[in-house]
Image 1 (cartoon, rainbow, N blue to C red):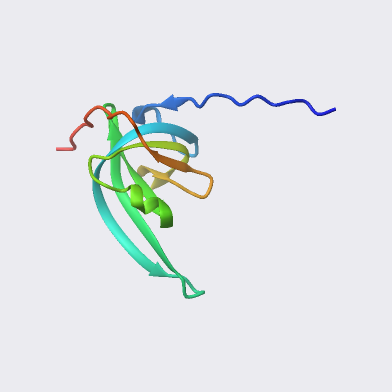
Image 2 (tube, rainbow, N blue to C red):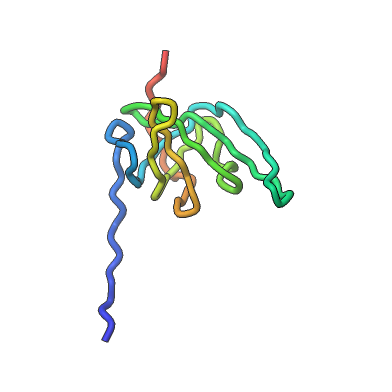
Length: 117
């Protein structure tokens, strides 16, 4: 007899609590799009890659998106990031949305993020 598993509610954290090599859920607002590339793979297909600056009221972090996820990279857009991976890239924390991550447009507006200047 199989035991029935119950789903856990996701736990959301703030940007200031992000640590390398963790998978996390976070609410963020897109501040700016840093670069958007379209590259060709060896099999001839093209792939879009986008890096943008996102954050909440506690801080900012880079977010790397690929293919279909690039459509969410719009300035002042509030997003829900689920199961994204945090890595260190050039000495800074960067979130990466891989195939296991889920990105959705948030219904509520995230508080204005801190300015870098």
